[in-house]
Length: 76
Image (tube, rainbow, N blue to C red; front, side, top):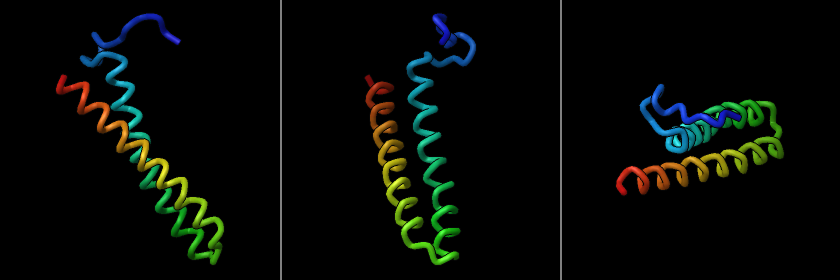
């Protein structure tokens, strides 16, 4: 862990950058999991496809929450 703010390098405070990163990672995971769902379905593994759907829903939820939080912080 760094004890130094790196916002001067990115132009975005670390705490804001972290929210942006989290939103991107969560939504990227949603896309990746779609491929995993299709792979499981192609193999006829409904249990695995359902598992990935649940994981996808949680990632989508995290991405949406991060977007809302970021919007609140940037507008305030």
